[in-house]
Image (cartoon, rainbow, N blue to C red; front, side, top):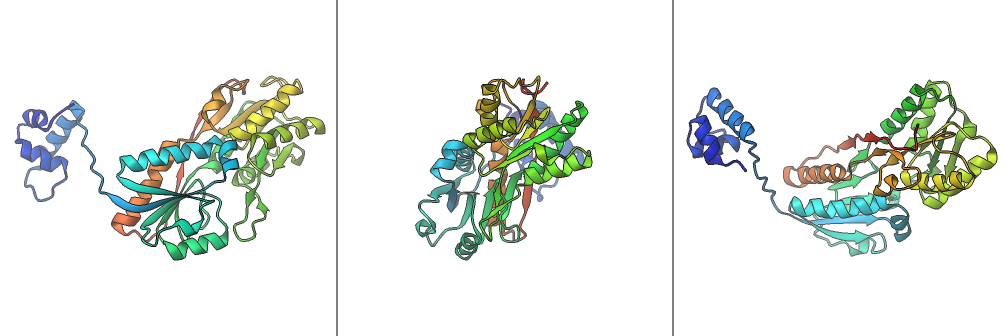
Length: 328
């Protein structure tokens, strides 16, 4: 690993000058040419500045995911594990409070929180009274009150439909689950279904008979949706599935019915969980970078706590399509 001394030797300046320039010390009096030579030498040697994060204490991780949801959808497990890991790296001291614990388990001196899971309006208002500094991961239940980091699901689905159309598919279907209205608790249209409808409408291939919506994003619900599709005899040549968890159930149903994938139905899903590469056939899926989600959430939290940021922010994280054998 490159050292300050090695950079100083190449740039022809003192080690102290290199250290102050690389730490953006505005009080040091050096020419612009010298600054550029120092940065050029650091880049040439592959120098990486060690980041020292100030300690942030009394942060709560609100893990509002039921045991059943966690077992069914390993996406939540991945976020839980990664957030704990990233927080430790960034010197953020987290304590975990689960949905089963409830708000009664929160300390009065809570500094800020990171949350994942579904909250209703009553819970959000109660949370805002307890602590006004918070970041949600994967959802943005109230953008006026709290920051949020979300995968760009709208864009993912649009790109999937674009891909299918480019490949010449005329019948494109969708299998997804419901969202819930935070004010009423009743089912509402998920952003993935909305995006699918808009995209297929644009290409003039929207067909209600090819859309199958279930209650939850579970393997069992995906299996039931796949069975319903086969029984309806409305089988599209291409299928956009809202999550890998649903897609695994759909694959099971279609395999049982002898539907050839991808010869008869191409399947494209979202999340790219680890198991996606091991099912039969391996799933083509949009990869959601969980480490980037968690890192971005903690960056927003640090802005809130250390800089006193008052303007709420919503950050959308893009994904990368990973092509496997479920698509021709």
